[in-house]
Image (tube, rainbow, N blue to C red; front, side, top):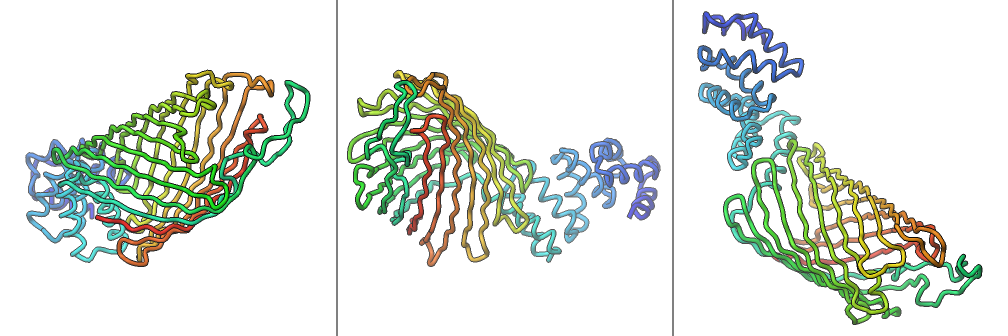
Length: 435
């Protein structure tokens, strides 16, 4: 490969040293694309138009982070040899790096028509999947869903299973009331929601969405819930980056009475590192206000910031691994006995979508938390560690219909016994989506 390139370049210019070209090629093969590009770029005025030189210049520029220069060189290659699949693939990658997703998609699809080898086809499918996720909204869109579920919850109220608790302040053991103990029950659930979006420019869009979810227990009606949430915001896509700023409103009803209000501001930045890897930074500020005078002491303001990562596996973008690391704080605003709280968290997960659109998913999370105030009854500063596991499978028996069995298990360890609990929720839900 190097010898043929050297011969061709020697014939094309008396100003280019074959040794320089060979050295540039060797540097590129060693993964030193930037150094190779520095050697090749000054020769462009005399060697532009030579297919072998242009191709080497193009791939060196691309791997050196100069996709704008790469498109110019590779376009010259394709003008001479439009069926050069390798050059066409790198040409598409260069436009992807520039954020010109429509042009990149066109070029990737041309390569697919050239019957590339399996490895190259998988790479192209990963890029096309990334483009599908990243392409800006072109028109207004509205969608919605309605669903129902049946399940069994071993601890509907996140309460301890210990009926007797020793209280250090009094040096005595007390019995808890039945409503303060773990309560298991079967339930029925209903959910409906929708969202709408509209493009303001080719790169900017606004959106609004809302959901209502209810859970009715067969016996423990005092733990029946209604969750109503609304979201709105603006999104911007710019090259490999996307930005989102939004507002969140929510209200929780417990046993038919307003229990808690939520107001929040969210922000997110996502960056495509490559066709398979996406990095994200997210943050949220929230106010939680309890409506029952008996528990409004738990009002808090919460701040959270985190880092997220998604890695698409080499199966055409159907499977992915994801993870996030976050930290935050709660400031008590109404005299919470345990005071302020500092917390952190880690979440890891995976999702696999089969060729017939069945989805398997699993995730694991851990969140330690530490409170600033001493609990007067237990004479300690409270420390918790919350663990959770979520496993689910989604089957699509017909277009727009899905059936999902799911298992969610959580456990909270605490140095204050009344806050320790375990909970397992097993459910089966059916959903109809509307576009």
